[in-house]
Length: 292
Image (cartoon, rainbow, N blue to C red; front, side, top):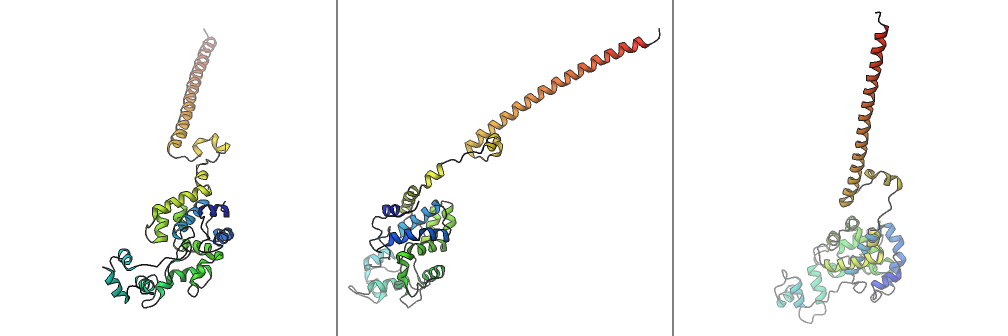
């Protein structure tokens, strides 16, 4: 069961950036999970695993854009050859208080719905449980949940809205069918656009599955109805179980067929003897009836 104790155990610093975040997530969870079709512990585990990685278990609710020129070269090597190239292309300089905004406006500009020559890049940075990014992402998310996040992008992080925004983005990115198939690689690809942090996401998924009892539920074999137990051939089986059931069915059929054949043979023998005896009596009776 998804509750506050569980979330606090997995996100011990979950309220550090957004006070009341954990309580808000838990309070919204019944309605949000039902509204967006997260109806099984497996799917909830996948969503929460992705959120745990994306927002750092609540400690990174807003994307960190405090880059230095040297790091910008490492992160975007095809854009910048060295620090001087960074400053030149951004129209910036060492110590520029607007350096980070200028950098993000350029590298995020003219993609993800961000308008070229605007401040969309630095305005619509990653936020929330799913780290929705880009003007287009905020627009789509706003339409899905019925809020205007273009005017208020920070509203994505409100405690009462955080879970719905994360789950709605999860659904918008078409993660749900892959979560239902327990395919974390494709869930990651659809939410992230790549496979960044896949190993950590897998670790988070294992934790959430354990917390929600997903593995235990999968391992618990359902009882076979009495009627089905009496007719093994009607119970769908796979692998080794199929071999066992099929073997038992074949043996039963072989035993039945063997008994049936024996009965038929005995019946034929008895019938033949009966006919022979009847014929013998008829012949003798006929001979007694003939005149001498």
